Length: 298
Image (cartoon, rainbow, N blue to C red):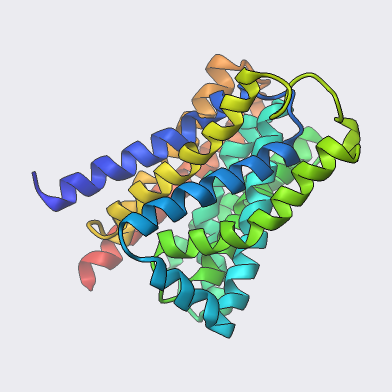
């Protein structure tokens, strides 16, 4: 099997896990999202530390955290990804998964604009047209629903900023993500301690949660492999695929989210949603084709 084929399989598997993760978060919808986020951070940090340790790459983590500039970027990236994770968990718990999927659909177009604004990357007329379609889609959805799709905008925006912040880092994706969750883990541990022993958000002695019953404990620990696994697969894929291929396969994630939201969870899907999603899909098709063409020229 060719390396590119292995890369596609790994990327599809990673995006499938991310897409189906909504089913997991629905299972623990009764657990406050900050508690879920805290467990996701801690258990993924432990698993990634184990994985990197077995690979003999812990020196790369130490080098990353000793570099003052890199450390500052990792801290900023950690803030962005923690907001992203929290809003996604929240969106599943409150029945807004369709809005979440829209956020991950518009992320590539937001990333293009951020590249133009901060990195001086030039956009073709077709790429500008794709961005304009996304802007029109969000504007129409805001008008139709009477409120901006804040979950979509926050998810797409934080993920776009996350990529922008990490772009200058020389370390690989697995190492940088490990650095992020290692830095966030003390805060996560403090939150779990305070929530369960000091009465923060009123969950002391409540049924459920990590100390409540075995089922919830299992699901919260499972957040570790569910987070770390796809990250390792993505790192494997990125070594074997072009960025254009990775970007195209990533649409598997929001597509699965969209299908779960509309078919399984039966979330409301109005004509305004239909128009907005149609415009986004057209914009993404234009953007993807243009990305492939640009890659062929290099």
